[in-house]
Image (cartoon, rainbow, N blue to C red; front, side, top):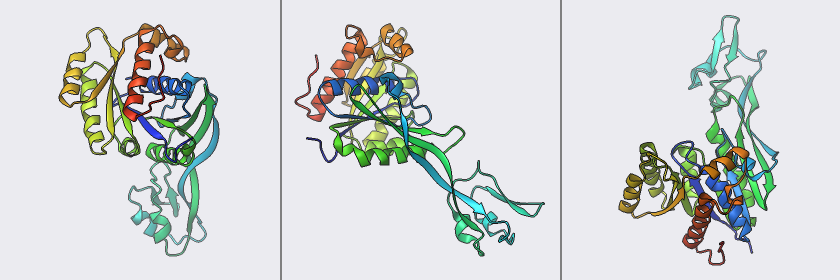
Length: 302
């Protein structure tokens, strides 16, 4: 029986290229094959690609729109109140005696709408992204996608989370694939989570980003599990990360550096389809550790 609220796993990492999407997609597929109802939520809205590894086709289910001022030039008295109120200077009075709207600067605060003394500004909208859905390998997928040229990735990310929360009661597990970094969207996702998988790699930058994410996660109280991807990478600094994990008393799962994983990624496939590969075996181990941490006693995949 599905829960009112599923167990929520966030897959996060401080920088791009650590393997967050690979871990999220393969883990979601394994959990589904173990008999759980899985929702995979791709919140990397500037570059959503989890669906490609699962082989899913997506369809738009919701547009993400924000406020855009519509200016009635006939009603406008050119008083300049809207120009003065705009905090990002997206409005200006030009020599042709009209109010010019610079859409690329607008942050949709609607201050201009409220200060206009003659009601010459009304509500319009502009599309900044889309929410899409799909299904593959018995995994349901919700994806946020930022419109090219838009800057409001946080808004698209948060609207996608809101959409997922409206539907996720049907599922046992929700896996959220997060964008790089430690911004407000990542923090909001961590606050919703039962377990954060912090994916890092054996580099100095990987360690620095892991430290930053650990500090952020500590503010939310979420359980943490470090996934050291590309373990055994020639010239890597795995020892430093292992020392940090030990010092902070965190759990650690290693996913070995594996050419088969790179080949699977290049083909747009899941590496767990090659169960004899080292990384596939490690991701199976990861799934079992996740099941233990979350108390999913019925889950076991060998």
